Image 1: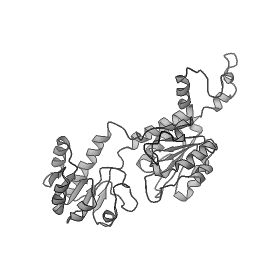
Image 2: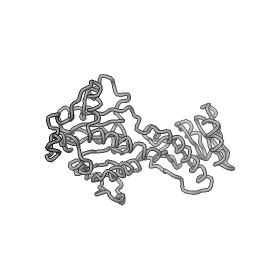
Image 3: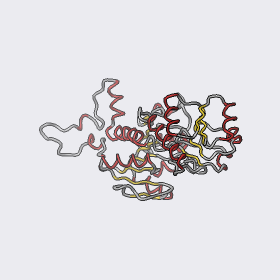
Image 4: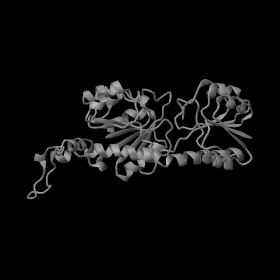
Amino acid sequence: MKLVIYPAVDNLRLEQIESAAGAMSVVNLDDPQSVLREIVDADAFFGKLTRDVLVAADHLRWVQSPTASLEHYLFPELVAHPCTLTNMRGLFSDVIADHVFGYILCFARNLHLYVRHQMSATWEPIGGEAARSSFAAGPGMVSSMDHAHMHMSDCTLGIVGLGAIGRSVAARGLAFNMHVVAVDPYPANAPAGVDEIWELDRLDDLLAISDFVVIAAPHTPRSEGMFGREQFQRMKASSYLINIGRGVIVKLDDLVASLDAGEIAGAALDVFEIEPLPADHPLWAMENVIITPHVAACSVRIAERHLEVLLENIRRFVSGDKLLNQASKTEWF
């Protein structure tokens, strides 16, 4: 058996790959022309696969994508090819879920606004200083300051896409005693504590009851443009949209229109239809919007997990066992 790697990996990773491969030969290449020659009798491939390389392959049975996302990786010939395609999903679930809760805590406790106040040395509670309770009276009445700060366990967290990332988001919501509901195209048994998991035709129900709507779905033929003005109008006016899935899922022009109209309270976005987000885009100037530059998956732990998935799949391929993260070429995940 033979594994072709392109582009080449560093020597440290290569040594571990060769150890996992055992008797299977490993060819580590940086030259595209060499790839075309070596792929002819290869059984497995890791890296960036092109049409020319796939056409030249006579025995290819397994392709390992180096990424979790597949919309940029797939092409018609690969979809039609009988090889098994695996991806790197599941590497980022806890990291991205932590990022989501950074957003949620900012909105719930107005931290994104207080940072702005700090920059201008402004002491002004959201809800107004005049509403602060006195030492004489104590906090015996609910004030406008109280109303302006959300109580997490009173909130409903709605998750769109209950895969590995969505389930990690749900676990964090449950740790904050939030009510958690979700929609997914393939609803399975809900994790313990999740109130409901519905099929996608119940999305409107989720939008209507959620204080935070978290998009944790991949880019698929069905999810592109899934969130537009109609969906925002079905959300509560006090609710927040969070997108850490894929940028193409949210129509940014519609989101801007809904924010301008006060149809939702705010949004936090790590991914966008256009990246980088243009400097003149109106979202930059909105105080109720948090923008991060596609960094939700950043962690020093990801590279080691990435390698371990590859090594485990190499071991499984050599021994004839079922591969991890087998992907649907038509659904893109």
